[in-house]
Length: 405
Image (tube, rainbow, N blue to C red; front, side, top):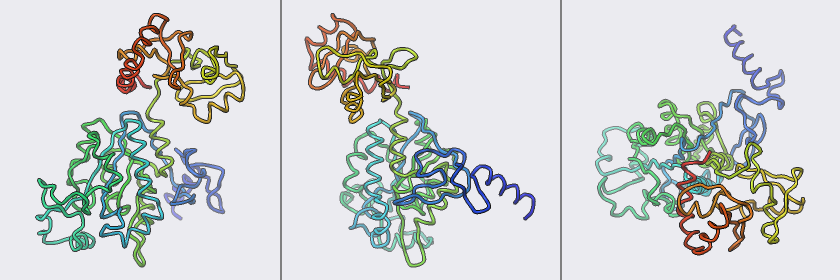
């Protein structure tokens, strides 16, 4: 072994715990995350797989600076009626791809994360190309992703080029950005990178179809363009043919090239964490509800002081409890017991401003806990309770977007 090769081996051994017998389970690569199945394992389809002895830089998603990018969420890839189902169906089913992509859409929409779709369309003029690669030829032959023209949508609904039906509510909501179509595999010929940069996005959570073609090509291009990329490996799939496993080929390259490779479960957790928090807490202690037991507000008109010894963290605040039983009740469904509008003044939220609260104004109505800044404001809030709540609900997303940390 020459000296350079020896240095690489020693570097890998140092960062990844290599021993004479292989990979040690005692050390993680740089950037290793608890969300992975094991310090030296990574999620692969339905279970952990021994990871490669190379660094894993990781991607720490930043609120407002990342986007979910979904490639080709279309019938020809993901529907049993699609023209490629005969070769990708096994992988799609094995990976639970359709459901996993939907979970990513749901997580992104619930946290107001940015979502982009890079579709694949072929118009009549695309079929006049004089030369093509192997699978380009196949796609043209089977009329994959065909549309009548760039300015026509006739015949699109329900066709192979259309979105999978279950994804339409997420894509057609007026917020998702559908970029211009890519024509071969990568986004070199469409405006994905431009749209991402114009929106201030520097981090991409990548999913879609198919793993070793369009998804891998998008990954490579985005990395070359200077984006951080994490690939959600089980939210994609690929063709399986005798002697060829497209998913396995892609998985190896994801791990070697991307900043990280996540399972859908990991990706959803990271998207939720990146949403940030906006909660009214007591100074540096971070205690919510002025130390009162949140569950006790729902049990009696006289809430109980919580014990500093019985505590639980949720959404940026620490809550104290009078009893262990109340803590257990809270942990089953924390959002059911935390105050509306992050514990800020409910009437203030209805006006589009954040105000502190007086804990003596606390009231439970319609199964929710509301607080206000003082008794006078409480009366105003209650004088038009339904209207106040409706206005506060309408204003809260903008308040959250502006002030969340």
